[in-house]
Amino acid sequence: MLKKGIKNIIVACVLCSALLLGTMPFAMAETPGSNKNDNATIVSSVVKNSEDITVGIQSIHYYVTASVLNVRQGPGTSYPIVGQVYEGDTVWYDSALPDTSSSWTPIYKGSLEGYVSSQYITEY
Image 1 (cartoon, rainbow, N blue to C red):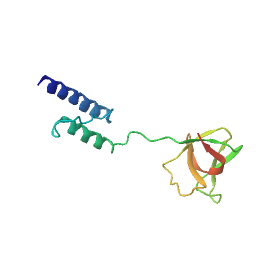
Image 2: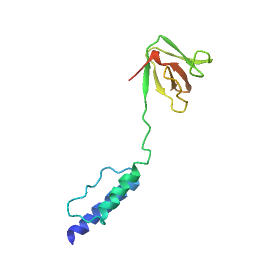
Image 3: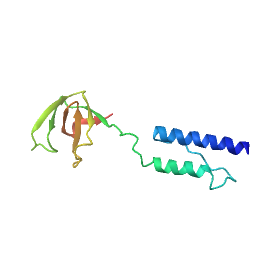
Image 4: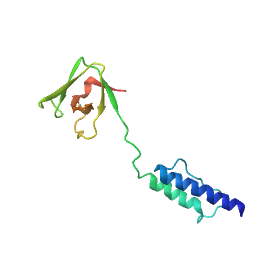
């Protein structure tokens, strides 16, 4: 009986930390002979539900390899130039802009955002 009480306390602590942190730090494995209706089942459902939570956005960044690289309003040379970045600058992938072309990459650097030719940037 004491072991079940301790197990319930541990499960309650894990559930509380998962709710407070928004993610499950680890999953409890079901042990042989454990009851499928016990608290381990509740923990595994929290793990499953926590997979749907967005924890963070992966940041993709590039460095500029061209001496001067034009940043354009759209993915092509027919779009106006909105700014420039320079060799060695770091720019980040801009997921807010549509990524419609494999030869043009949507980027931002500070308040500057637009498209650059993919051949003049290299991913870190």
